[in-house]
Image (tube, rainbow, N blue to C red; front, top):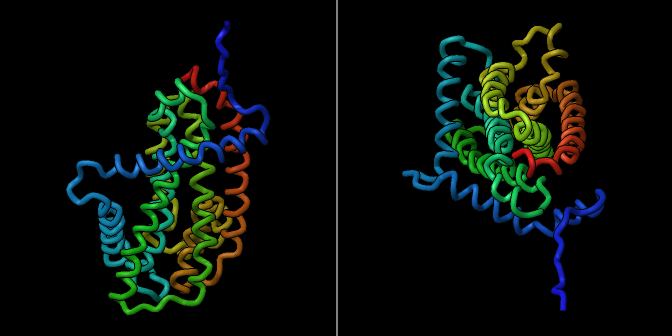
Length: 273
């Protein structure tokens, strides 16, 4: 008597694919938790590295831009101005770095079993978001140190945190798929992150950019996200309608096109990787 054959195949059609993502949610939890453990395994101070890195960066930016260059701080202590920008930037840069190489890192899983590959870069972004939440401890400490009371606009912060998550997710999907096909992106991504730090208003206020360049400058979605974080947590600037609107449109386009490209190339990952 012939034995029944079990065939495991990818979901047919988009609706089945998204249902598969729900079915494999436990794998998502496992990957995210595994990445958290691996990141800080055999480190002396463990997860405290999520606090040390942004704190030291804030100190450097405060000394260079605040003390030496004497750039304007929008009426708030310079460390607060800097750290309000470091929160979304560190999350974006870490998520971009981790998600871009996530498919290569999990090559053994991809070549052996079926599951929606979208789970992998998404879990990498979520892990970086955990670091983002931990980093808020420093910001709270800075507010206590400077006796700074956040304005009522702080309640809008989850909206801008969601926008920064979208920016990381959209860019991460593009780079994750591209890295599988073109391994050069393993060297391009660090350059993108470094270059992005210089062209984003992290260590300074975007108000120092001349008005005639503001629209062009705001095509970088992190400009609108960072300015919105500062508006929400510090209330030191007027709400950046232009840069916020551009950020929403660009992030939406990045996610839509990122998902389309990722799905288009996903079936070939196991063969290429």
